[in-house]
Length: 458
Image 1 (spheres, one colour):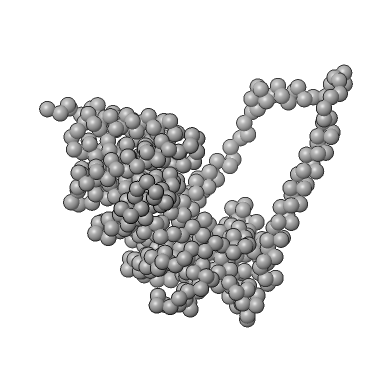
Image 2: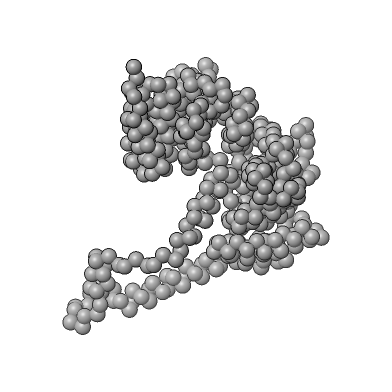
């Protein structure tokens, strides 16, 4: 999970609360990573750095000395070996590309190969052009099951989702939305009703449809925002008709995720992952689960100020990650597995989201917000203490702790408890420095300066 900092307006103008926007939801993680990639492009014309003195010494010391004794591997032998290894690696890469592409019909194979290579180079225009042609070919083949196999709907949707992802990367959100919409229609066509049983293949199809629905809701919300600013055509073809369409997709995704949870879990078939790997599909395509779906829907209603919808979803998601104690399973011989460290830190993130919701939505409830933030801190600190040193899980928990500490500082500042606020800000600053969270460092320093300038409590 990647923790991002977000700021939510509180009661008084100018006062902002530092909140967590969890990236354990694959949808958001993809957007975040895409933003990072885009921002790095502008620095591609930087001049090359001058080698350090140590590196220069290494270069000069490797020059040829005819009087030096011959020992170990000679430069020529080493160069030949490196060239052989490089050629072997390139050859294996080409072989792997061709071997994997063999799973696709001949009619689309070449277009997909060019599209994937262009995508890897971030040549979005070329990638979109070839993905679009491959998708157009795929949907017009006379006998899809014969061409793609029994899972033809899933495979054709993979091409569509790859196209939409590239269009999104290129900034063409309206067209990306229309492609996601087409893929969603194909994925949901012919699925059994809730009263009917589903096959394993249909469950895979439904899971992908859930992820696509969530993606459409996320992208649709962005398009509606841009449209409200007068920067997008007032045409339903270029995105959702209105907020009702966004909510419809979220409700559908949540309903289907709850339904799928009742089914038995199955292990993926051999080679199933290759379909995603072949086209470099975004991670959200295969990363949909009930918790992330509930979180996504709760986040939406939280942004809209619909507390009555957001709170139950957050609470349900938290109880899914950290099930409440069960009297039957408690005791010395309980066999129920305890929640993982990662799940506990994700739950702490959602607790903090609840805290932010209570603190930023009228009527503001500071005691409730503080209680959830303190619980989030307790859960995250305990999980962090049980995690391995320098592990990804520990860093995940430390990110949560840093942000929750700041939030508690802000809540106490709002409550005029400046001594407690200062203590929380200082701890948040220390943790942010320790983990290299620059934004957290800046915000904590600014908060401490603000406190220092305020008159003492009488």
